[in-house]
Image (cartoon, rainbow, N blue to C red; front, side, top):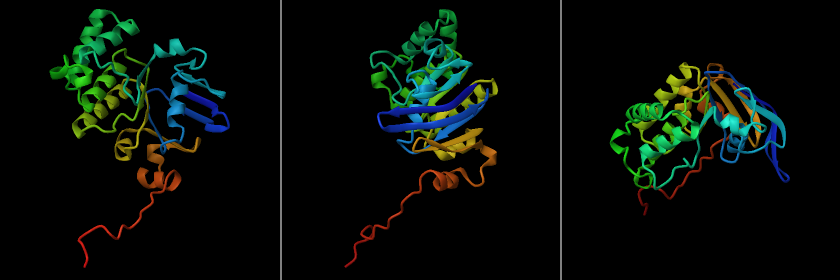
Length: 247
């Protein structure tokens, strides 16, 4: 469903993504992991047709992302890191607008909107303007917008960051459900404990280069330990001045 062949993106002399090869099958949940600045967002932008590669290619739903960006956008759902909401629209208006943009018949849009509001516990806030929503409500609204057109592939940038545990569980359960129905999910996240519970495939990238790609069950150790070994080793420094005052 997602295929990258020698995918490369340079910005001047800087190589953000370096000869990335990747395959994600239909109905899989693939977690794309790496530190800030590793090339994750650049890769997702190329996968969703927002950025052309310098060389190589990426196909999604059988479409070349760079050559068919408009057709591709009709087949995918995207949860961007900045959420992409309009402050002067309510939660419900965002979903109705999404249906109109994707050409979903209004009756179906209203039915799906009602189901998503219920599933994501947004019914009580359906008439709340985005500017007045909590971060959790805003994230759930953007997530609902990604789901509403019934996409073949979902691209989610940091879906579990800065949300409460209940919201995280609701989103996790919905992602597992859509994957069982054949929707491919490609997500980035720094919440490794959540990733280990939900993902089928783990891909790690460091300085633009892929350093790991396997089924989650093929990890040789815990995801956290393997991530620290391959991608980013935490620095622990003792701060001797912290603690009860010493005289």
